[in-house]
Length: 224
Image (cartoon, rainbow, N blue to C red; front, side):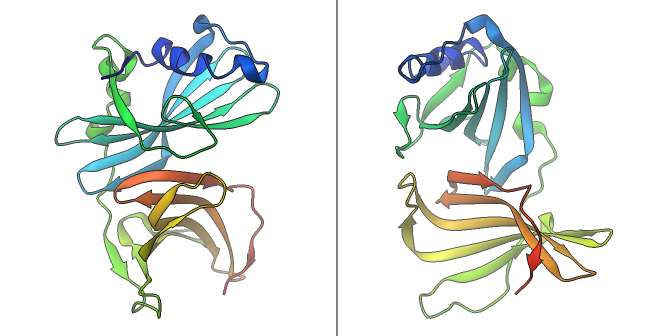
């Protein structure tokens, strides 16, 4: 099983990828490790979430993990690497650039931040269990739309909705060939003008996130 520290080990896992792209990082460039609660998906006993690794030079590593809170088993799903010059890379596992492969075992060292900092212990955070309720009957393809009542609420003039589509068949996205049979969209709806936008999308294969996208700067458009 791979053993990484929360910062130095992650650097080792990615540093072998970057030289061919013209980027050089030093291990001591790591300045901070944060939990990104906005990119968190709770499914059953496991939580998919992001640890954000910040570098002194301005680069960033968004590390997607799946944590089973019953067994404490951790799986490294993929990394979204952002370099100081604006180049973005998706790395699945620890080496597959831009091409989906299944996650790999991940276990931080006992003295690492991810093991010692209570704020990074995801299973101890107050992350609500989803309450998925069907919004429609299955369509002709047997796909069905749901809403997560635990993560949908009104805030002022905005409705914040978490919608999910349960697909009868496994699909693969075009960009990474990542498989998914459930897709979550985090949306905002303006109650005054009935315009909406999608902020985040999470694709899941079973209970594990296989792809995500963030469009928080998207414009509002007429809601269907």
